[in-house]
Length: 289
Ligand code: ZN
Image (cartoon, rainbow, N blue to C red):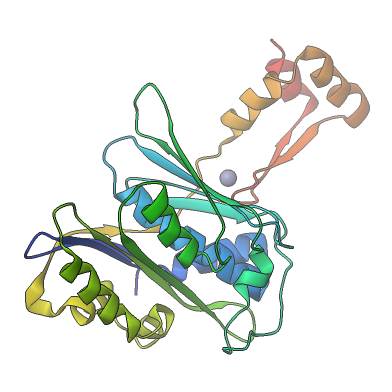
């Protein structure tokens, strides 16, 4: 099944919902960065949520997310545009712990619980929108739920899950974001909370072959919600040799000359996709300003 996300609204107009299948996206990130199981789960949850956050906007907008919980993973960075292109990395990919007391990957231990979650939105306006909240659980989904409630004042439920095979490849990944619209009363919120309380883990539903549509139908009832957009989701980096070259130019001629005479060339690796770019002495010469 190809990864995609859907955008939906309940027929009473009181709740908007997003759901995504992201197994291939998370597998691509894992294989590029060689993340170990717990790190894959933390990065995969973040990538899945970020893909939906990007898709909430239109045009050239971009959403960047930084999860820094003070744990052994270090920072998780992800960004997404409005077209379902998402990329991200974790500072220390080689983090893996025993399963937690619930038999799940111990994401909270890997992420940590002492730092912040930051969301930066570039909506093409003069100023960037930045929101920051403390990490509440390090489980990622709860941290984004808290972010929406506190920083954006939108009561929301965010869920994301990743299942990892014994060989560390990704078995299943997916997520949802459900948001209560202005004008909804307490009954709507209470009912949603009740529905979510007994809702199965999203990664299990994806593993069972459920589509994003089926997941939202199961949550709201098929006759209660309308899907109004479907968008492919994929890991896609925006790095290029030209962009890295511009960054090298920015280092200044003296630095570039040192690369030429001391290193006989330069090599740069993109954090997001691990692509390696090599520059010969001649190419470096051309990058001087
Ligand atoms: Zn890249």
